[in-house]
Length: 122
Image (cartoon, rainbow, N blue to C red; front, side):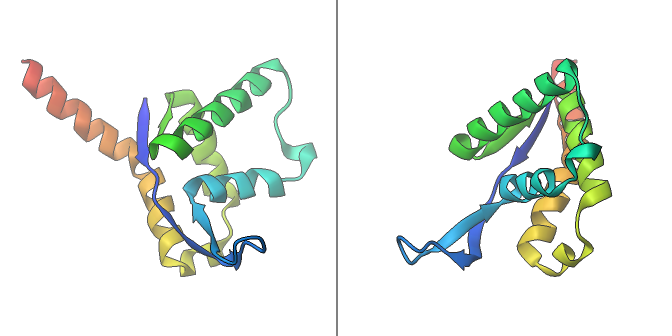
């Protein structure tokens, strides 16, 4: 299981109803990556349907809790997509770079946490 803290920041787009900046986060970024993919390149089948359902549920929970919790297989799927599809220009935005870094480092952080727990148990 991977846990990623979700930080939000003011985006460049203003909500026409409120006049306030729309909040952006890692969740918004990954949703944008998924939405911008050519439908022909998206995986198909019932297993992939279930995987996307898990992603959707995890995103809903994370939006409320502030922490994205992903099973290893779901994390691996999203990580591959982020690594392959992220626009390089997003690296110029500090908030994007920080969020993507936190997402990609989740694997390292969770391994470190497991070692700490392992030491506490023994």
